[in-house]
Amino acid sequence: MGMILSLIRVTPAELDGLRDDPTPLFSYDEEESATVDGSARTLDVDKAWNAIHYLLTGCGLGEEPEPSPSAAPAILAKAIFSGVILSEETGNGYGPAQLLTADEVRELAAALDVVDIAARYDQSAMQAAELYPAIEWDSDDLDYVRAHFEAMREHLSGAAKAGDAVVQRLY
Image 1 (cartoon, helix red, strand yellow):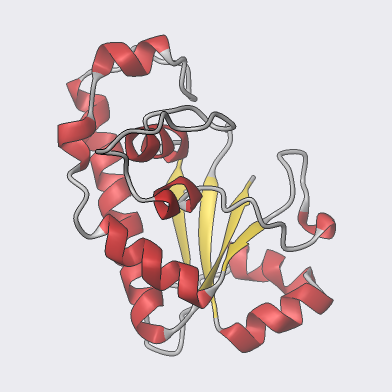
Image 2 (cartoon, rainbow, N blue to C red; image 1 turned 135 degrees about the horizontal axis):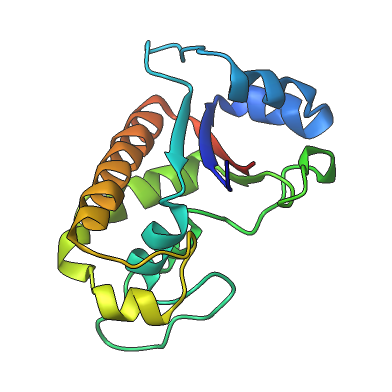
């Protein structure tokens, strides 16, 4: 099956509740529930998460991007893992769920709106970075990553417009 990333939209009130009791998070992740505006609550980024992170930041997880005048906005580094743990109780072997506040979601959605993921795609660099899943990166993989990136951008844009926070969960 592998490691799959879910981005789960929650209202600020739901986020406050999840901080006290994260149990409902697991049902959000499994059910086909919708948000108040009718959008899907959960987006499955599948196994494209590591490639998306790399293409947004130019580095692997846990690495710091090289400072440069053309450096991407810092919020892009939080697109996959924010670094803010929701609760240790949300761990499942791949670490605990992390969260983006509603303000961070708005900032991230705006930053993602101008990203051209295809322009950042470099097969040989991605191969050298040994990104998950360990595959030979080719043009078909660009289509896979781009489709998941576009879905992620749309999901976060909807969350930003609604004032929602987002929980990031790898399972």
